[in-house]
Image (cartoon, rainbow, N blue to C red; front, side, top):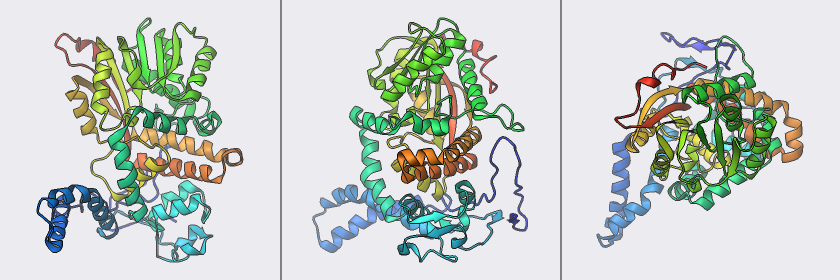
Length: 470
């Protein structure tokens, strides 16, 4: 069904061969209707009422305020997500019934029919457990999501936020990070190869031309070259890649730029795979290697160039400044630091939070340092870096994830046979939904080149090459 546009609307569907195009980009309630003053009043007022009604000593008021702040915030956010009025939309959804999109298997969910839309968290939890089936391709289903689902925070999501997300954000011990990384990345190389393809790169690729439908491999090759060019890699330079994944960038830099490259990962499988990849690329072990260690244990040696592609999110908010200070300490005074980091928009909508909590629970636990750009820049500057340039590559990520999704769907039988239906469906939702999220700006990715903010640094020498081109 064609999109119905409201009178006076200016939205027009685009058609770029390189990227999946939006069908119904509905705007939902979010920061525009969220009132921080009201929230603060509730957080401060509710404990005061309790103290007054229960006739507790006044010294208990600050204690209650601290103890109840997070639960009250979660309850207030849950309430707001259910009753906030949506902002003006420029498109209308098809207006079909819920049962046109999903099939209820478990009678407990039969109330969701007609125009009684199902909360997103309720849907995907039931879908993972086989209590609901879908009637069409998952990506197309989610493109139509505003016709059959609502983005209300549920009680279980509020509980997860208070009891798991917040404690993990505050802690980030070595043991916690190791357990989370190995549980995730050591699941099996075949699991990741099913969507990442032969490059085994779990970070955003780059489109060179939106009018061309490049393959995933072409996009990842574009990215590898772009990263190396952005930091002006030269033969013989010492290059450190923190959070190297399966080691493809480490091997690529050593092979094509003649660097002495070291990759760091906590993944045991990734370490073995990366060292084998270096051999496959014909690079001697004296020139490139992958080491399995926590980033905090990297010897404080000096490096000419340091790269970190979508690992810093796992460092966490609390540890982020420490991490940047460590990088600065390891970087030569005339060196360059390349940071590629997933981020979130500050002008949030409720869908952004529902997606974020889903990602934290099922896909990237502990990756809580995905923040708006202003926060990342402030952290870099406060750590003593000067930011040379920033590029936002969210649409490139959408194109990348769409190709991952297509790979995943083409390997449905083998993945289901090896890992089960729930793991297949979890990544099916993750890849389909993330294709949309990164395209519409809910989440994005930043490429940042920085250097030490020193008077003697040769800033002029950077200007000619650090442009957004592959």
